[in-house]
Image (cartoon, rainbow, N blue to C red; front, side, top):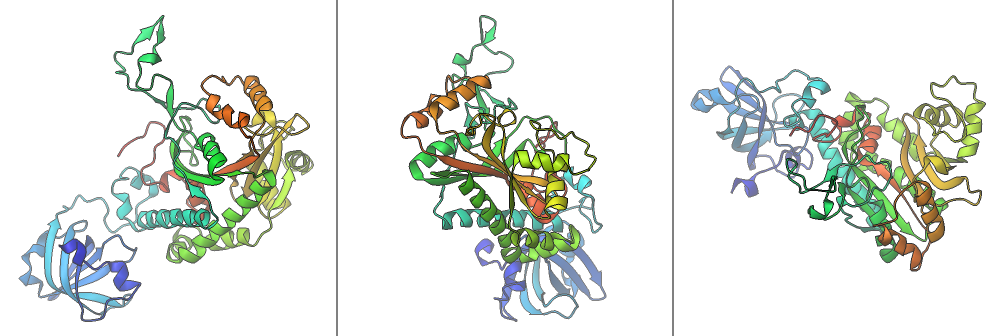
Length: 464
């Protein structure tokens, strides 16, 4: 029954809820093991916090098992909590009993030296045991709670949209196909794959977004949000792209673009505030070891009033900037990261929301403006990276939506369910998406998306 009777290291070191001279049982992994004259020391980490607790073993000759306890081994230690005699720690354990539970030999790759992120990606099954990745995983957990807390306190309902979908939300075609076929014996009819014989009797994919289904639920529940995994079969080997990632997607009935911008700004500020106030230890770590400006960066966003400018005005600003951009600036072209950073860092010195983009560069579901050339899209740009949130007011009118789908050669067959909410009591509605890993990268200063998700999925890499 050690699981119930154990004392977590975080409870000892941070809550200080364990009185001195209290018997404790600590279950964890050995970070370092060393023996001095008449005494041995084990640094033990149980994953509940970054800090280790030191176990002091007087008379190590009485514990022959110590010869087998190397870095990486799992141990069960019983003893009394006492004030520490050494520097840098308040408490330690005066050991009365030590047991080797899981042996680790000298080939254990996480020895005392500091390892590169590139090396640790090769052993993603072990890297959570390091300080950096332990902190990152605990931070992901806390930040996830902060996201749910934000929406729940504002009356949003958390909804679960399908992971297996029959629709391509973005219309980009970068999809992972889902099938029950034996790929060595795929049934065909008239030379074509016969999907009638497949498990779902249709083309199905891993979802790229929960938005379309989120719209359906918003029509019934009012304000909803999804927070789950999404997938893109984009063959992009960059530090900012992953094939599997998590998205936060609120969808609001009766909300127009201005309401959407208001929510996006408030959400981002509150998320950053939560990181600073409720994840203080993790933010201290990131500020010390990853990005010295981490705190100031978030505080600057929190204290800023986001600038809001139409796409057309943004293009005029960029054209007259005198900057030599790598990518061309022209009305009708998408705004690139370098342009976004110019707007946020040089022109305005704060976050910027660009809205009303040309319809040719945006998705089919965005509401068309009266000019017939632009749509009610918005992107939230922040200093340092550029776009962090993308969203829009959705097209709630049936005829313009059908026409837009035809323009973009998106078949309306099998999309009757999506069109029905335009036929039966259509109302304005809006929403946006925030990539969870992109947000973590921005908050922490981590530079590669592969390092902020426990088991990254990228082109030609699906280990673990």
